[in-house]
Image 1 (spheres, rainbow, N blue to C red):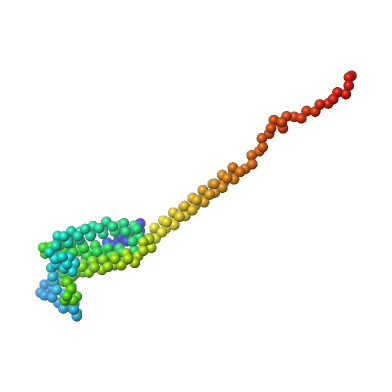
Image 2 (tube, rainbow, N blue to C red; image 1 turned 180 degrees about the vertical axis):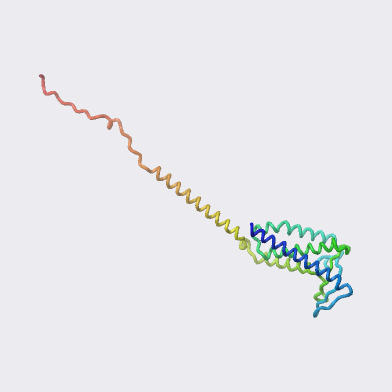
Amino acid sequence: MKTVRRRGALLVGVAAAVVALDQWTKSWAQGALASGPVHVLGPVNLGLVYNKGAAFSFGTGASPVIAAVAVALVLAVAFYSRRLAKGGAPVPVMVALGLLAGGAMSNLADRFFRHHHGAVVDFIQLVSWWATFNVADAAITVGALTLAISLVLSPGGRHASGPARSSARSSARSSARSSTARSSTARSSTARSSTAVPPMITGASRAPSRTSTAPGGEP
């Protein structure tokens, strides 16, 4: 149970950190970049953009559909995270789910609460030929890659949790003790059934022996 709680707390903590960092950087960008883009280093630029599409400006113009997909993603992560934690899911999987949930929730918060007609605040541009994105987009991308790699490289059953292994060992020991007890009972029954029964005494053996004495003669 403690392992399940720790895994759940890890997922919630990662998701909360993503939301907090993404929302803070978006608020900063709206104030600091309102007058125009800023060059940072090399091809990296910061410029304020309002995106109605999905991550990295994909699907522009399909804001309602993208919002519905994001809601479904968050609900799916919330539903399966506890089941995965109980099944002993490895830490990278829980971190990846936290990144996915946090990124999706933060972009949903933009669409519902920032009052930009369903648009998301983007401001990071690494190269001129790539779309502008934000911290939530980066978290979603890293989370998806981490989840895919973890699922590919982690065979089923290898990452069983410690409590699960302990439970399996306890069950095995209990089964062994039960089997031993049954064997002992069977041996005792066999020993009792093989004990010699006293032979029955026949009527001939019970009759006393009688001897006849011939009369010696007439008196």
